[in-house]
Image (cartoon, rainbow, N blue to C red):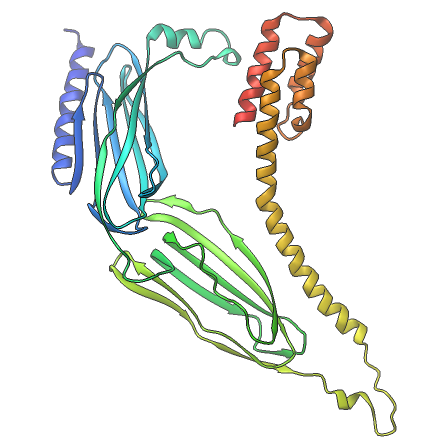
Length: 395
C-alpha cells in the first residue's frame, strides 16, 4: 500500500471521527453512507415559529477515490416552506477526495410538523473525461461529460409554532423616522422619511404611512434586495413621503411589531405622532384699505406646487422602470435565445441576436459571423460561436 493511499485512508478515518463527535451534540441531524459518498444534514434547532429562519447545513464527502465527483443539493419545492441558498463550498483534500458543504435558510409557512426534503445528486467523471475537456487553449474548454447519479432525498423534520398574533416581521428590526420641519406654509411640502432595517423575515405588506385627512401625499420607496445571512434575510427599506396641506395636521403614530427571535417575545418599534403647524394664506392682506392690490406672485407659488407633484411622480416612474427594465431584458433574452437555437446559418444568427448586440457586447461574435458568411468557413466555427452566444444569453 503506497503512502498516498495510506494518507487518504487516514483522512477518511479522522473525518468520520470528527463528524460523529460533532453531530452527537446537534439537536437534529441525519447521517448516512452510500456506495459513492458519506453525507450528513443537520440544523441547530428542531422547533421554530412561522417565518423564523432555520439554517440547514449539509456536508458530503466522496468514498470512491478513482474518479472526479461533483455534488448537487436542492430543496424540493413545497407550500410548507420557502428557501434561500446561503452558501456552498467545495474542498479538495487531494485529487479524487472532494468534500462539499451547502447551507440553506428555510422559512416555514405553516404550523405543525413539516418535513423539509432535499434532492441530492452526484455527477461522476473519469480522469479521461476531465482531461479531454481541457485539451487545447482555454477558449476550447468544454463542459466535462459526467454520469448523473441520484443518491437520496434526505429529510429534516421541524416542529413549527404559530405566531402569537398578526405581526409585521420575525427577527430583529429597527424603524427610524426623520422629519424636515414641523411647520410650513400652505401647499409647501413637509418631507417625512421612514427607514426600516433588520434581519429575519419581513411582511412585505407593511406600510408606515397611509392617508391623512385633508392632505395630499406623494410616496417614493427604495427597497434594497434582501441579502441572505445566517440569521435570516437582511433588509433595508426606505419610504419617502411629501405631504402637502392647507391647514394643520398630524403625522400619525407608526407601530412596527415583530417576533424577536433572540427573546422569543413580541417587540415593537414605535414612532410617536407629530403635530404639523400650517400657516394659511391671509386673503384679507391681498387688498389694502384703498382697494390697491398687494402684489403677490401666485404664479411662483403655483409652479412650486406643480414642481413637487412632478418630482414625486417622476420618482415613482423611475422606481417602476428600475423594476420593469430587467424583466423586459430577460424576456427579450429568452425570445432571442429561441431564435438563436433555430438559426442554421451565419446570416440567420446575426439577425437573431441583433436586438441584444450592444446589451450583451456581442460585437466580436458578429464580426466573426460576418466573416463566416462571406468566406464560407467550415461549420465547426459557426457552431462554436452559436454555443458561446447561447451561453451568454442564459447567464
